[in-house]
Image (cartoon, rainbow, N blue to C red; front, top):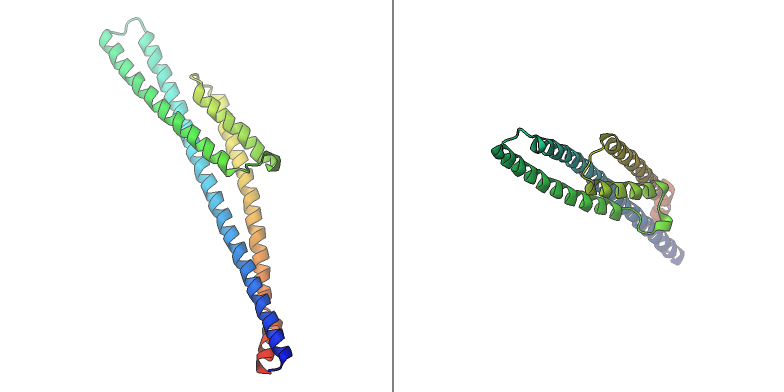
Amino acid sequence: MTALGYILSAIIGASVATAALIVNRENKISEFRQEWINGLRDDVGSLISHLTMLVTKKSELKTEDKAYRQKYTSASDRKEITKNANKILADIRDYSTEIIKLSALIELRLNADETKRTEDEKKMIGLLDGVRKECEHTEVNREEFEKLVTNIKNCTGSILKSEWEKTKKSESVAKIKKLLLKNKFIRCLFCKCEKK
């Protein structure tokens, strides 16, 4: 093999190695993006579940309060109602704590740089503020609650779709790079250089 053949082989080998490194990097980024998508979906699902239970418990507490205030309720009934109300209040505290934790986790998944956040991410931050306020209120407004949950689902769907598009685009670029690596012309050049 001549000096030119060695040089050409080295250049092609380095090119192939560099291209393989780029493809591996793109694949790893796609994996991280997919994990991020799955994590956000799980956190939002848990958030909505806990919000639903919080609203349910608030409604139960209101029912217990009405029963307690009735004039014909006996002392033993009132004691039982108080016991039930205390259990419900403990559940409300637990759900509220978990909701605040989940809303913080979701917020941490979004772009930390406020100037680089997408419109959907900004909207989600506002919705998460609404979620935290729901934990502070004792009254239940079913209509507002359902609107909040619907907005969270829609906003999450938009964010996930955007990230999925980025993932597909990244994978498309990786596929093109893989095809270039498998190109018969490049392999042919490499084989001819080795035969000389």
